[in-house]
Length: 478
Ligand code: GLN
Image (tube, rainbow, N blue to C red):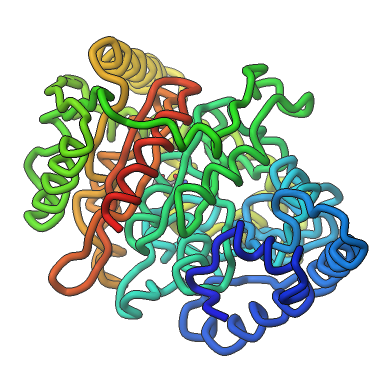
């Protein structure tokens, strides 16, 4: 079986029609992980018992001739920032090396209730802070297309697992691009929904006002299916929105003729790689040939997005990470003699350098005397960026941009230069600051065979339109 190109519908149908069993399917994925993951490093923990129990339940349904639920028997992987009951959840950090959560994240629970088989937990940058997966406390992830290169981050394991055929679909989190950018680097589809569309209950918080959960998959249809399964109000997350969830899969069939597509010059500026630019221009041509109307738009505050993001995100992170102090969760330093010593040593031993850098930046930005100059100003910039999108969306239905200014870079290439790493997030952080949905779909390869991603941004709660355009593009590209 071609595990690499297996879709959700095909996997489910095979189990339903008993061409294979969910158990055999899970076993084939574990065999693939055993043979290929030592080179890639996508998985941190496997959950074989849990997977095989769920697979057996699906096999019983299929044997009785009962209809499987929408993800019945489909093997999936989960980024290790989403808590899983009884299953180690590390957030890619040493501080949570032995943490066994008492509950399931809502998104995970919803996938499992829809029949998905959870293969294991996926590697990521520590507390989702990073763009290359090199900040994982455990091991880097390598890009399945080129093992010398990064898979992107922070959901590097989630992207690489789908790209390498080690899961049919996976979940990731996106605070400033961590779903879309690794999807782009690995040549798969990655979707960040609207803020509030998917419950964050059970997502280990990085920056609560920017964090989102979303899917990685081989196809847009699969992404739509996973989103439909997870989306909707959850009483456990007061920021999850009570907005009707459309049937995203059915919506894909509506045409795209007449759709107005915005192209913003600010996203095609200095620093954009020539091959990425050429690939994007070809994609825009293709969309025009499908009957879409291409309209220039302006998003004038884009240049302030990176500084605003790295203030807001680090400020929230410094508060969210205060809970890791040796008292309740995870590691407790054995060296300490007093309480404050215990806090200090636990955090010193448990957090890696990037996490410490962010806590310091965030604490500084929130401190008395600097709050107005940094945090408050960043929040004002956030409002301006949101208004940029609001006015653009009066003229157009979606906005298309590159997902990342370059294709995947080499391991080690940027790890000594945090600023260079931060600056490369320019095309993705804006959607988190504004809370709008965005998807990255593959739109070609560089001459050296590295994937390039097309990003489509939409109005709040209008995932249906970006999915529909992404699907039409994917079909037209073949
Ligand atoms: N690369 C960005 C950062 O390092 C985004 C990370 C994310 O989306 N979790 O903060």
